[in-house]
Length: 254
Ligand code: OOG
Ligand code: MG
Image 1 (cartoon, rainbow, N blue to C red):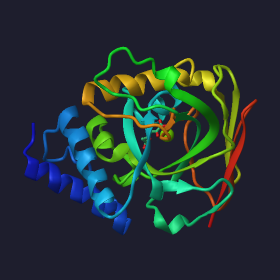
Image 2: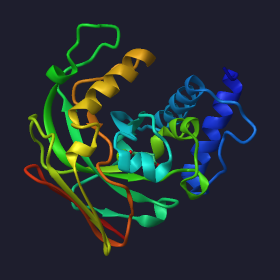
Image 3: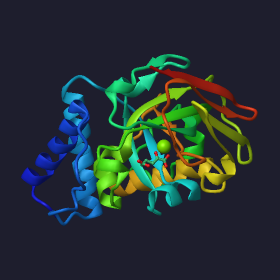
């Protein structure tokens, strides 16, 4: 376990990388970090954002699909926090210059309708969800060339940078829906089945991490289940994610 002072210093390094849009080398160069250290750095990093007035409005899963595991060389599920500042309205403009090297991902969003106490073993996480929607995540690793270790990416809040959510609809089974992401001239196609076999499993994966790390979930928060395909560079112009039976979400890079 690293010291509180080093935890704070590494959180500051990541925070400055984001606010100044300057990439940094892996934290693992020169520091021995374990996964507990990494989540402590993430909490301190998000705490810095909260001290600037941002609010945690949800959570994201990472590496829930083989496509993402293969693209980034990491095979363990990670969790990050979403803040209100990261939200992009469906169809809205996104300034590319606010990021280092942004990418987009096709995702499913779930909405919680009940608080989840991490110390209550009886909670059925699915009974705490009332809505779902097609979503697009913007990831922007603070590490040079998106090169990071498992602990690096956890510390960096799982590369969280932005997200757009399409129209909400009631929570239902969505294990085998076709997914299409396009950004600029490029596209990725896949299926929601790529997300842990069924994106609903991402909720259970989040619940497991929250119980282990005593993270409370709150009614109204959103959960991004993780990308169904590899990510694409966020291009100028329209980027769109379509999920069969759920609808479409878009944004416009400028
Ligand atoms: C880490 C975030 C991964 C996902 O959906 O798998 C992620 C990264 O690839 O930079 O958000
Ligand atoms: Mg993602």
